[in-house]
Image (cartoon, rainbow over all chains, first blue to last red; front, top):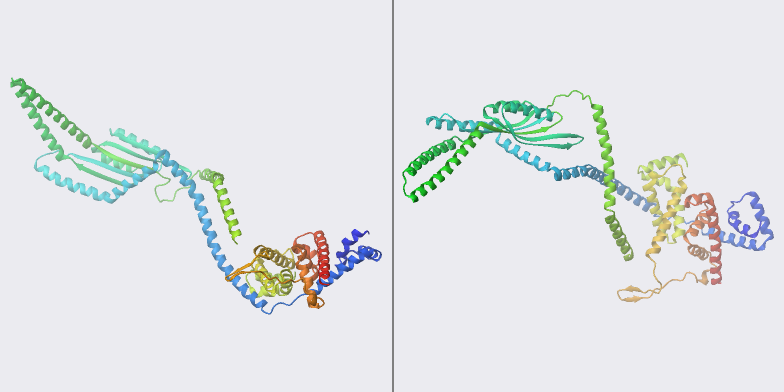
Length: 386
Length: 193
């Protein structure tokens, strides 16, 4: 054993961490080497001195104070625990909300930009509300009453033809949109009605595509009731309302005015034949022209009214739904296919969410870095202050 | 670890303070003394060791029964001692020639010189203080290892578990710590004689 090895082993020797052989070697060495022996003795002295410091007993109030502190800690922990529970609950809920709402929001925003379907639904809600407030029965009753009074009036004047414009509004839910739409079109054609205007949208909801449509139908007035019945039987009618506008008086006025104008025209023509003075002729011709225009206007208005009266308008609003009644449905044959679809779409959704998270993280990375730097600087400043 | 200790740990992790007190009863004195040797001031030692026990109470749930409870407790105590010493050093470092500012004006600092008290050297109590001061002049890593080994008498293996270092490192640190202490003590004695 050389001196270097010996010096290394002084401490383990003192601490009795050497094997028997090593001990023996060590003891042999320090017997011969005075230098190592000196270091050994000094180290031993140091160790003895340090050991002599010994342990002191605990202060008298040590356990009492510790007990108090422990009790404080316990109540603090209990409070903190419940507090933490709430916080974590809140965080979890808001996270879930964010994750679930964000894609929906995107969908809505996207849809608004591309199809404006959002506005349309709002409008349809407005109209239904109006109709609801009037009420189906009330409006019909009112109309019957008012037409009754009108009838009396005109009966006295011995006028047979009542001119009434009828408008209907139907809002319904249906299951197979395309099939029912075709049926309705066929029916309208068979009754010599026509589609004035139609607007059909596709709406994505969950994993299914739904159709909704707004169709203006013109149908001969005598077929109106039948048509309403036919359409409303195709699905679940949520709202059916009919309104009538009695234009009989206006119509008769116009007719009277038209006959007056015709008489006037006839007289003017007679006057024109008799006229000799060029000035008179010109004046009469001017007057004739004016009367002709009026006649034409009145005639077209009359024709228009005739059209409106003979063809009633049905404003049909249809929404496609999964089911329309509360009966227990028979088990869908495609249950596994559907659930597979749902499963796949959920997985796609999760992937999308993660994609979004990654995209946002990267998008906002510059801001995050900036914030981190600011926080770092702020902390540093605070530390310096301390 | 005895079965009794295991039961007490389970109870304490459910918030039973009495069980916890029983559990730490045999550790308190040693913990206090480690802190006392390390921090020097009795008040600091009390604070730090109690802080450690509160931390142990708080985290006793996380104790896994595979490791030794004994060394786990002392590890926490040692870590808190080192942390608080570092904190104190950071916060309370001041220059001796930097005057203290008071309302009445500036005051120069008067520092007690612990090294030169020739009259008391032979007194046994004072000699103990001398050794204590010498220990306090060691770096943290050597100071703690000397305290654990020579004052508290932990084995090399226990020390390696408490400080989470290898037995080889324990050996070399003990050697170096003692060498440094030897040199410091020599210096002090020479100055005092």
